[in-house]
Structures are given as C-alpha cells and as structure tokens.
Length: 115
Length: 114
Image (cartoon, rainbow over all chains, first blue to last red; front, side, top):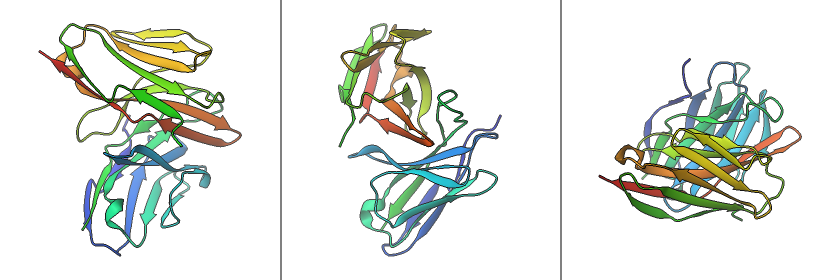
C-alpha cells in the first residue's frame, strides 16, 4: 500500500511569491491534515480537510489556504511568501471514522525555503 | 497556547539503557495519544498510541504509560539502540463532532550512544 506522497520535496521561492504544495493520501483515507515544522515552533497544525471540506484550522494567517479534491488529494497554497514561511510542510492522512482508525500517517514533507 | 508539554528537550542514553520521555496535557477532552518518531529528512512515523481508558500499552521495546488523573503520559524505550536515535513527539488527538485535530509536543531529540 503506497504511503502519503508529497510533491515537490524541495522548493526555493522568493519573498512575495506564492507556492502550491501537493499531497496524495493513502488510498482510502479521506482526511488530510497539514502541518508546518520549524526548529523553533515544532509541529504546528495548519488545517484539516475531510470529504473536500475544511473541518479545522490552526492559528495561521489567511495567506495559508488549502483545498481537497474529490479523490482526497489535497493542495496547500501560501501567498505573498515571507522569510518566516521557510519550513518543512508535512501532510498527514487518516482513515478517520468516528473515534477509531484515528492514526495519522505522514508524508516526507516539502522543504520550502524563502529567500 | 501549548496544550501538550514534552520533556526533556534532549536526551542522551547509553546503548542498552532505558529512554524515558514525558508529556503532560492540559485539555481533558483529548481522545487519543500517539507517539511519533522522526528521523532527519523524513516525516514523523507513528510508533505507538494509547487510548485514555488504558493505563499501559507495550509494543516490543516501546511502552506507553498513561496517568489520566495526572494528565500525564510517557514513552519508555527499553534496551535502547543507536538506531533509536531520532526525534520523538508525543501528541494528542481531540474529536469535536466532525473536527479532528492533532496537537504535538515540542519533541525530544534522543541520542543513543554505542
């Protein structure tokens, strides 16, 4: 069974640009969550999508947005990039049915560097 | 507002020793408590998880101890090996209706010396 796939693995962008990251969840998983990982702040929750709807959102500015498609694939967009957006962006998928099958499985992440 | 506090920040253990990582949570409404292991350049990988109605869960060399009244849980790695050297994250999951949120501790960098 294929794992969570994130593309691209590495990105270098300039301040002010925008970026789109992609995540393909494990087959059959309908929940996709996004996290930002930095040395100083650790793993911070961005948002979760389930059945194409954003179900929960972390404490990030509106420059961070996402969407989920009918095949459960998800994209995350960051507009007007700032230097502080440099981080490892992780996607996690979960089967998520009620309070069982709740484990989240992570992809390898996209390393975003803003210069 | 950090709802899951993890300690220590870093830990050095000799091969064969016991590694112990502790976490405390503030939100009594958490429903599930997983631990993740992360190697450099990789995403976190689920290691072991426990529900709040269970006091202990063991999988191989890894054991979670859970104290619901104290709102604390810990990971014990028995017979620690150099290959266990990684960053470990405790986490807590809360369900609210259709909402699902995973909150992580800050992580513990474990180094196991040969």
